[in-house]
Structure formats: structure tokens, C-alpha cells
Amino acid sequence: MKLGNFYGIGLGPGDPELLTVKAVKTIRNADCIFVPKSDTKEESLALQIVGDYVKQKRIVTQTYPMTKDKNTLVTAWKKSAEEVSVEVSKGHDVAYLTLGDPMTFSTYIYLLCQLDSLLPKEAIHTIPGITSYNAAACFGNFPLLTGDEKLAVVPVPTDVMTLKPVLESFDTVVLMKVAKKLDEVIQLLNDMGLTENGLFASYIGQKDAYITCDLLSLKGSGRGYMSVMIVKKNSSTSIR
Image (cartoon, rainbow, N blue to C red; front, side):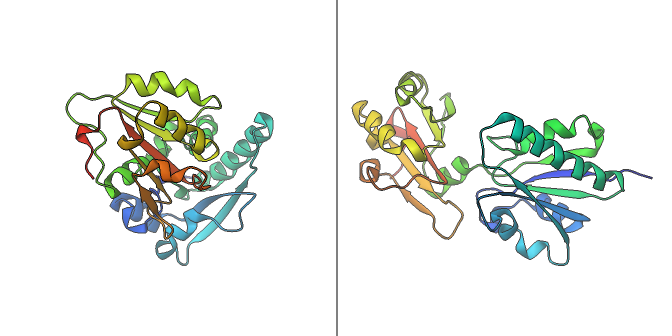
């Protein structure tokens, strides 16, 4: 039997209109849709984004544990990869949905690593999606880079002070996973004189989208979930 194909599809930040044409075509042509969901949520945001394109499609929901235990996570990803492999082996074209871009801080990467030993490379295809920070920069008319400027994309570490050399070395720094450390990050930026050079955005592309360049106003706000912060070392290329 001829093998089907596996397509990992980046959905972008949440706005259905920000899906690529290729993503929409692939979803519409797929035999079944695999949808990831955490075990702490009742609904899948990914499925909501593609709702208009998956009507009458067979949906397979895969639930992943929200844990940092490596063994538990590896077991979950192996199981998911095996389920995908079975479908592809039957000759089915499978679309796997993932938020943002599949290759940028995405749990999709762990699935891809497991599939590498189960499917031939020619059967595995990844379709890019718009990242949250690209969407945020465009939504806020906030230039990421010009000329020969350098960009760093980093997750906020436990020790926020380790961000200081990064902020000093790069022209633009994108801070991901900022939620739990938002107040500490703002304090560091304030100490470095950078609070006038940044943009904060959360839920970009979704109904609760929020964006501001007044970083100091965020202290104590509790915002930060599903958010990204962009900081420029030099404010001359920032547009207000």
C-alpha cells in the first residue's frame, strides 16, 4: 500500500486570516486532522483557528500532559508519533496542527524527532507559520531589524539578570515565555534605561489581543500569559 503524507502545519498566532494559503489547502485536502491539546484545557485553540476548514473532517485529538517530567513527556510523544504513523501507513494524508511556527519553540519539534524513526523523510513535510513576535511587531508597527542590526530570540530564564548581557549585545531582543517573570523583566529594563524602547503584546491575533509600548504600566498587572516582549537597544528605529 502506498504511504500517505504527514504535514506539520504552523497556524500562526491565532487569527485564521493569518494562515498561509498552503496551510489552508493542505488542511482541506487532508484525510484526517491531528489536534494537540494540553490536559489542563477543555478546548483546543488550534481547532478553533481552523474551524471553517475542517468541517466533515475526521479529527483526532491528542492530549499531552502539562509536566516537566522528561520520561512522561517522551512516552506521550512516542504514543502520538505511533498514532500518526499508523494513519500514514494506511495511505492517509495527515495534517498536524500547531500554533505559531512549527520550528520555533514548538512542542511539534519533539513529535518530529519521534517520527523520524517511523516514517521516511520524503513523507514528512513541515509548513511554516507566522511567529508571535513577527505578528506582534507588525501589529504594533514596531520594526524588528534594519540594516545590519542583530536579533536575539530568547526565553526568559529563571535568573532574569542573565538577560543583561543579551540586551547589551543585540540591537533587538525578543523575550519569549515572559509571563512568570514579567515584573522582574520590567525592573531590569528600567534599570538599564530600556523601558522606552520596547513593545509588549499578548494574545495577538485573538479576540483578547493587547499591545502596549508603556512597559512600566505592566508592573503588577498580572499580564504575561500568551505574550511576547520586544526590546530595542536603540529607540531611533522604533515607531510610535
